[in-house]
Image 1 (tube, one colour):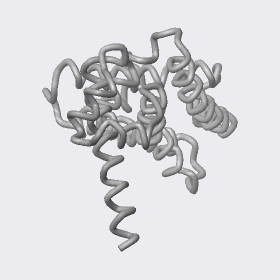
Image 2: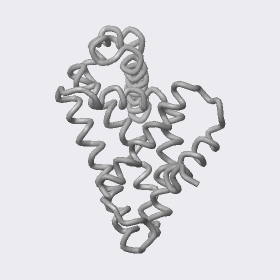
Image 3: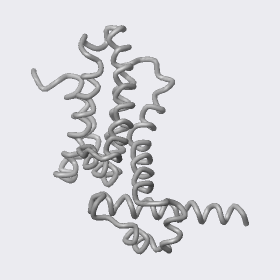
Length: 196
């Protein structure tokens, strides 16, 4: 009985999450209301406020979950791999796959990077954390002579930029080429550049 109640609460929270994510990704933060989210997710307004005290808290929760899906899982998946270059490739593959299969999260994260409000700064700090982690992997690869000398942090931002560009490509072109081709080409360009 208790397990059933917990499961129903988790399902309700998941329904709120999915609805809010979609609404924020389509309408943006400013044009999305808690009332709208409650109606579309088919929960009472009081229930919505039981889980999230306000729109800012709900938005932060969605950002956190989105970052976990796109970044944290990728970094956790390579914890036991010692080869830095292999780590970078696997992280990039994971992030591109997740961005392509979670377009609403990706779109919302990208849209929210550009502002100056507290929620924007929160997102920037979270992403910066993962960029710094990537720079440490790059630095290790440089020590092992797998990666060219250069500023590891700047290289990390460039990898992040390539990742963003890949997601934007897919949003604009909606599957002109397969996911595998997108991943293969993106990682090839990142590792080898575009010059002959």
